[in-house]
Each structure stands twice: as C-alpha cells, then as structure tokens.
Length: 316
Ligand SMILES: C[S@@+](CC[C@H](N)C(=O)[O-])C[C@H]1O[C@@H](n2cnc3c(N)ncnc32)[C@H](O)[C@@H]1O
Image (cartoon, rainbow, N blue to C red; front, side):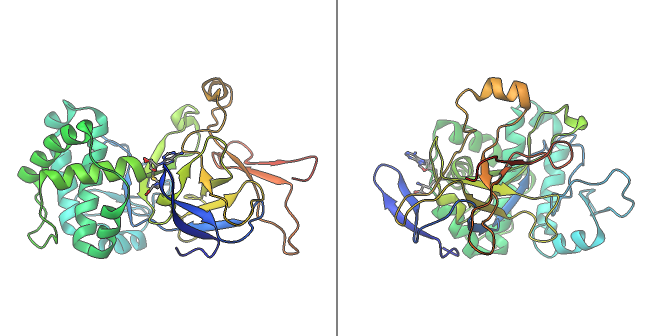
C-alpha cells in the first residue's frame, strides 16, 4: 500500500480488505490513489464529446484550444493530446476505438453497456501492451466471470478479433477467456468518476469515466461506512483523476476501513428525487493543530451548481 494509514489483510467472509494501521481521525486523508486504467463511460456510437479523452475534464464550450487526434477523439489541449499519445492513446487504441465506432449497426443491436465494455477491453489490452506489470495488477484483483460476463465476452471478443485485434506483442494469450476475466475484474472493481450536475444533464448525475485504482480496489463495502471517497476531476490542478479517501469519523487501530459502494441513505430513491444527491458526507481534513473540522463535504457535490459543504453547528 502507498498509504501508511492502511494495511491490507484477509478478512473472514470478505476476502482481502484494508484496516487502520494506526488510530485515524475524522477528516484524515487515508489514501490518494491514481488509476492504472481509465476509460470513457460514454457510448462509442454518437458520444457527445463533452470530456477530454485524456484527463476527462469537462471541455469548455467556449474553448478554442481543444485538439483532436487523427481519428477525431477530442482533447482539452495540445498538451493533453501529446500526453495521451505518449501513454493512454496509442495508435492501436485510437484505431481500435474508431473501427468499433464505425461498426455502429452491430453495436447498436447490443445493450449500450456493451459499448462501454468494448471501451474497457480496448483500454485493458492497451494496458497489457503499455505496462505489463500494471496489467498483472488488474488481473490480480477480485472477480471471476459469471454467465453475463461470458455472454458479453463472446460478442466483444469476436468483434475485437475481427476489427482490431491487439498487436502480437500482447504479453498474454488474446482469448475469449481473457476477455471474460477482464470484464469480471472491471465489474467488481471499477470506480466511477461522476459528471457534475448541470442543465446539460437535467440535474441527473451519471458517470463520465471509469477507473481501476490499484489500492482503493481493496476497500470492502459497508452500509454504514467509516470512510468516503472523493474525486476532483474538473477542479484539481494536477493528478485530477486521482481518488481521495477521507475518514468520516475517528476509528481505532485495527478497525476495517470500508466505503459504501452505494449511497448511504437507505431510502435513497426518494432522497435522489428530492435532491439528486447520492453522496456521503465526510469532514474536511483536521486543522494543522489536529483539531477536527466541523465542515462536512459531500462527495457527490456539484461544483457548478450547489454548495458542496455543510457547516455543522456542533463540532464533529
Ligand atoms: C472491490 S472488491 C474489494 C476487495 C476484495 N475483498 C478483495 O479480496 O480483493 C469487491 C469484492 O469484495 C467482496 N466484498 C466487499 N464488501 C463485502 C462485504 N461487506 N461482505 C462480503 N464481501 C464483500 C465482494 O466479493 C466484492 O465483490
């Protein structure tokens, strides 16, 4: 683990999990994790290019400095395009996405979800070519394919095999079994980077991109979590696709640290109708003198429309 606050261990009935390696305070940042793989959550066919294909920041409608690659994937700047061409956006991946996009009739007969799974598989094969060690990390995560993964893999593997097979330098056999295994890892481990609420999406929040985070993948779920994860895709000046995990309340050393994989509020359907918020509140980090903050931040905040912080009357 890159965090000195957490230790990975086996937990009965839950597989691997993360426990506090020291007493942790409300608001404390216990993990900052960078993705090993990121892919767009937009459909392949007719996506509206509202996010940079590299950093996933929202493209400004007035921006005149966006750039695109030879296959018309859009980037927020020439710098982001150059960074992508040197890492996540190889010529093979670029061509694979455009060939998949061009076979619209075939993909349109399938659930939209399979277009996003196609993006994931292409990104995963790219990772295998670009960073075999990070690809091994992906393969080591929790998840074995179920019937739905195998069905999706049948279709997607044959599509990718015929349209855009990965180069022969792929360090693992390119097979149906590999595709099914990868889809299972993605299903159980991907974190969604949310898009902000805006008039564009009628106040509904959906996912703009999915990421695989090698350390955060070991958090187990709890309906009453003691930690909460944040992302700052549009606002962080650098490493903007990192996720940050903060404590909701104090916990002693040895306690398992869990996130809620779902909104905390049990009756969230009605809460969502009322507020469009599926979030979890966590205090801001403690002050320099160690005193707890009485300001809570919602991890489902909308930076553009609604305040993301709530000041508590009593200190937490
Ligand atoms: C993102 S992984 C978490 C890390 C995982 N335990 C491991 O060993 O790699 C999600 C998987 O962990 C297990 N898991 C998470 N929370 C759990 C819980 N509260 N009870 C039982 N299993 C849980 C489930 O198998 C789930 O599909």
